[in-house]
Image 1 (cartoon, helix red, strand yellow):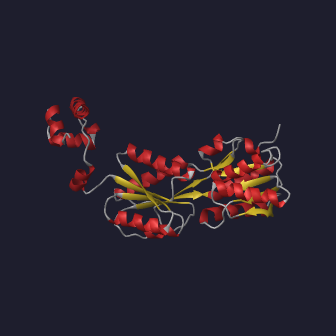
Image 2: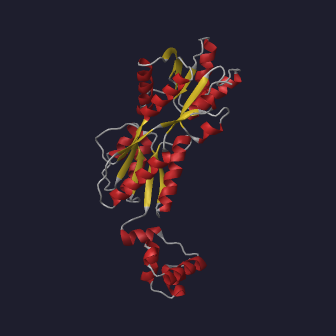
Image 3: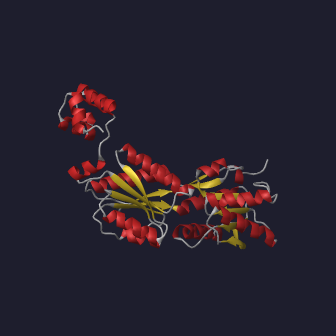
Length: 329
């Protein structure tokens, strides 16, 4: 395996020049930069991150603490953060934090000094171990619940999207609503509170007989919808579902039972993930500006790692209107 001194010898420069190229190539003369780049390519040289960390005290590794990758929402978040990290010369590693045990394991890794900083999706008790960890490294949280107790926060205003969704449904003639999804965690609780608040001051009626809360997955959405159809309750004009993934399960059940969307009932999701576009019919969904959120989180973390202060930022949710709520032809 080629070493940095081999690159220097082939390029006809000093080891210090190669080291400078690896850190700040734009601050070098063009001919020198080209010779070093050619030597690196010919020798297939790859810097040793562990040797670099011994010299600089930095690992250039950023930990991304999120619950899971099976959920399209978190999968998209991790891929974007990973891409943005790589563009800046950092390696992103995944730390799962869906359970308390996983968060404890993640905290152990952070105490080891293997990472320079952490971006943490902060929801649930599990993250207490990460957010309260005194490991001497910067932590930025992406938080669906906006609080004032932690400045290094990228907040998500979940309520705005629900308000836009309700206004759209009202505009297309919906009067009676149902809800399918969890209410136990902080983010789903915010969504339901916003839904109830809008209905209380509008012409929309949230039917308690079509309010099913014991589902968290695609399969759970299918089962909740099956129980609803089997109950004989009059279907509402529209069902608001807590996430795109759950909504896809609801849609599968409806179609299988001969209930047409949107002709017989309108259906909505939340998160605007890729599955909302690919479903048939395509799914109206509350849009979370994921790219902006992830980029802001990384910018904030880089600022903290430079010793700068952080101020919280908040991103509002929007709405993507698609076939599942459009008036039938």
